[in-house]
Image 1 (spheres, rainbow, N blue to C red):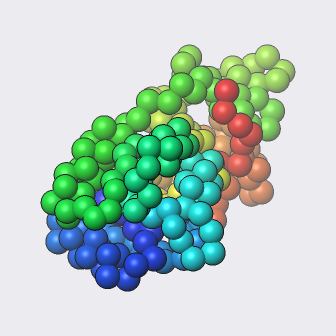
Image 2 (cartoon, one colour; image 1 turned 60 degrees about the vertical axis):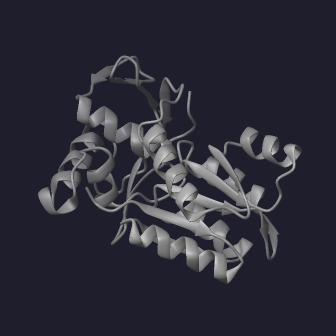
Length: 234
């Protein structure tokens, strides 16, 4: 499988470098952000599988980054790294959606163990979502079908359903083809045909009654991937 990408948000350069080097040594692909502005941009736009988040950042509060990251990616696993170890801070972070809370100073060995544990628990995190809304209808995730406002229904294959589910749960950002191959097909990009994702998207557009020349539901972002432009979760 492709190496997992981890976004490290930490303003202390020495700590950030230590965490980044440890992750890279273990085979992860680390991304870095040192300020609130950069963290917010990366957390809501970049493609990665885990967020390591400091709370005290130049320009803002890391908890605000957590809130926005959760809006963009409801299933994103998050570990908070901070010197704010008071019980109230821990409770607030966990209630806002963090999976774990590591108080500084911490050992790199312990952090790596927590990273592995959180990724293992959340790889296929179940969400209590029954449907995805889109213009003209809904995706019924339980019945594995599309339902339209005119009363018509269209069955979905298991792969089509999982592709729509993943794009829908990450609807606030563009999802790359490589990420879709890894998370939906469970394949590294090198082992799949180049057009695999594109062909499935084309079939889904047909089923969604989405204009292939000017799509409004499954959008193509040239050179980056796809984005689901439907409504909210049900």
